[in-house]
Length: 317
Length: 299
Image (cartoon, rainbow over all chains, first blue to last red; front, top):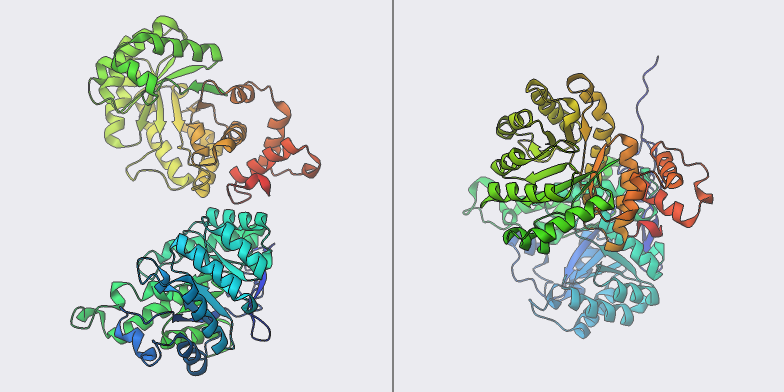
């Protein structure tokens, strides 16, 4: 009897979703196997890395994260251009952190203005991410949805408490939405069902499983993403056959290990490299769990992850 | 399927008040109503009963036995209160059952001797030193341990009721599948050390956290699945008529259909009535064929 390598029998495929407007759109998803299991199926689209841009100058970033953008932090459009022009960003993720009522409480009109400026400055797809404050996100993302109708954005987070308002806006203005649930596979499925019931077409949903940084609950998120993919690919679970977006940059750069100086934590090594490595590892792990879009911050971390991804695809460094 | 009524519970406000005031009427009325509803056992749940537990259990057992002949499950974490209840219990239509003995050495050493001393039964709760078992194998290991100890102490297999601990399907679907697997293996595990051993479970826990209006179909379908897997009894709402019907075998078509799903036979399921399809969908969720979501019936 000859030895046969065990293989997984897949019966589902992740939907292909196109984000952005012609001719600058990108397509993600389409996998017919577990992440990078190229010996069992296909990954027609390489996962994409989106670079973060903030709507207001960051106040509490560690030096390592701030340094590459020090000349552009006051101008989101210039920042986005730098990401694309100097660092080769394939997508931009505009983080509307300043709209949070607990931060500067920037009004929705201002957020629309910034979104338009950034969108006009780049030729790659734009992700627009709210502050995470449910009520404010409803107001801000809805207004952006309406007033930036020509941009075909990826808008998030769309949660159980906001899916009606934001799902309807997406429906009317043809944006894609990031359906966000708190690290739970059953809730992820449920929100996708609810969006479907609302009439949001399946080619406009991307799953945001909610992620944490390496050392801060990453394993839990990883398992949930694995289960998402198992249900989607081996259980024919249609409500989970969507690409996954991981908004991880902001998670990594807020943990203490990326913020402590060399004097404060001599054992943790060079603070400049430390944050970059933590961000790269976090991103790589989420790619291995099934991430299709990872939102990242540091150019060096991004370069590392691109290299690793190419190796996984068998394309060399 | 043997049914144990869960309603006589100190957490129920009216009953808690009556127990506190030692006012027998509502307690007796409830016991009579449960018996009339057709349960096989009545569970007397006093909760932790830290203060005056012994006297309370003794009193409740007496007044309940004044009005019903059904056997009782004595349910409290207070070990002394259990013994006080056993002391006054009269075996009319069956033995009293200690609910429950955890699979922790100190609990088993303290409580298993009571089973033989008072000629009672015992629920073997599969909660070990590390808490809740993580999978079917850990449930098996705990079972082997407690059954061996019970047998060594002279407890007959038929007097042991193994409780595998049912988890809510909405948040712990994988754990539920492990529970299913274990139940299907229990007879095999028990055969050597404790032949004839029984099983029991808190059925409604499976639907805990699911939308209220959908809990009945989860409970009912799960009871059908459990029966097929070999479960002997369920602790249930004594007044849930649908569950009684299923337990008494008065819904044979639906039960047979659910059992077919357990066996993996899904031929002709697309042509079934809407109601039958809902049971099939529910069974598939409870068996892990599809991932749970609150809208599982709408898919």
